[in-house]
Length: 127
Image (cartoon, rainbow, N blue to C red; front, side, top):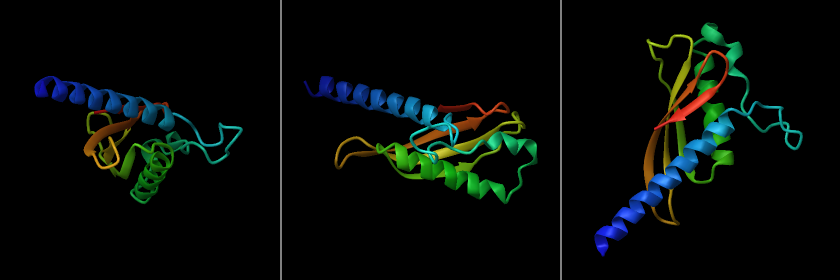
């Protein structure tokens, strides 16, 4: 009986994680100013940086993304975004998202996700 319960819990955790990834992806594909209800909802359009963004821009982008995720996704806590360039994709802006996934009041699971902004501005989130 215990083994079935553990499997169900694992499936539940995976389901929650898939839900979070999907929601974070939707959040990060929402541009600031596109919501009529909240002008501050969304992230800035980082595609303007293109390949010319500087090292000075990176900490601001990291903070913007982390702050927005923490504001809008209560299942993630202690969100940290770290720039992670990919030499195979020089025209994309890549980040690692480290956070704690809150499963219940006391149960948390550390998660690490990859966030990629492609040259057209589309954001993908994967684990």
